[in-house]
Length: 434
Length: 120
Image 1 (cartoon, rainbow over the protein chains, first blue to last red):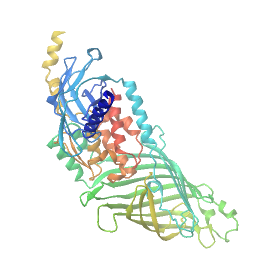
Image 2: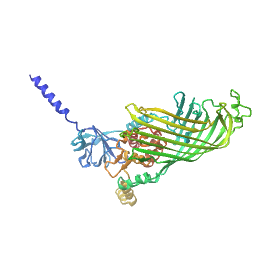
Image 3: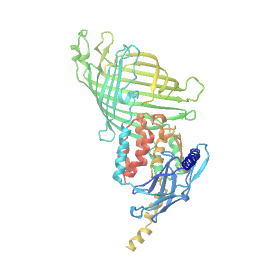
Image 4: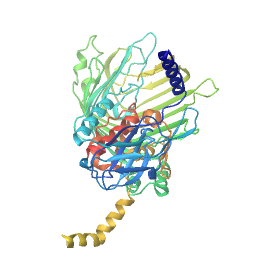
């Protein structure tokens, strides 16, 4: 009988507990000694609504709480307790919260009294290990291959069709240990006639970035949070241009994948980058760039070798005359995106990407001949290339989003300037796994 | 010793430096610096520093990638350059971040926080 009574009471108690939410409790309170603003990072078991610094105290030393603030942006369950002075492990300090506020599932603000927690001291070495672990996670993030930049890399949009094959391989940015220096490898190859760019590029690039907001950011670093800092941020956001990017690269460019033409090329250029601008209540944005000046110069590494290809080129074919390379290039591009999955319109997301580049070759270079399918011509002067792509998404699921894609490419790119003229339309499914 | 302390306390330059330091943007977890650097390259991110805690839009910023706030790889590179101006003492760590638009901003916030602590 007693056992039955106990079971009944236990069931009642658990039922009552199920109806309540567990109030926030302190999971950890960590402190690392630094030369900067000393603070204790307190992690709660759930997100908090607010915390008042007057409800936070320190015991076990002479230090006092200067500020207690939620770190809502980074982690809403974290309170940063700024203190004066330096904590010592010997004093076994405790951080005490007499009151914190949180929101329950009915969106009602409730008060909790988490009490005191002993501060754990974390050494610099342990912090460095954690930092390196996070960096490794970040470095393992997939880099999608539809990232396009005609000017830094000569990379162009895929010509993918249902009955043809193509490959776009872009490898970038292995850390070379030199600030601003990275490497790149780009292959663009397709079997589709009129869609094969025959592009291979690999090399090293040094990049210098001049931010147009540098002075305002320097002022921001010297300004405490408040209206003046807001004004500085507002000034930054009103500037149309974000930065000037200056690239210097040394690369091997070749005809993918036969290397009938291979050039060693040095490249330098400056590109103006627009700030990403928002519209439609930040449901849409656009960005763009202009490359007013870039120069490519180098030498053909296999001048005349193309004459040995099979079948033999026509008599008088020119590639044997090709030697030095000198090109000026300029161009621009823009990307626009609008996304509103709550919209009643059939199209919930719209992506538009347009890029164009033109090159002026000052010296004769080897050209791919579409008729003979050989590199048996030469030419110089202006060669342009443009591409546009529109993606319209009509729905999404847990697996990804789907819609249609239209793309258009026209023009030619080095090293063999194979003419590309293609228009594609197809259904599109983008998985969420990237 | 007492004289030295007295001299330092009455040194107007030292006092001015202390006052200026108190008026600087406080460096704790680095969250505010990351958000300002983001706002400097994209209008998709806005911040109100008069509020406590700072009010950031979009509110779920830590769940988003750089691409979600309108940045491409070059935009990430510019963001890093701007963040270095605000947190110059961890410049080497910031440069190690890849110029990859798919990186999660929450991870970057965590990395910056740990880098600040690791700098000592």
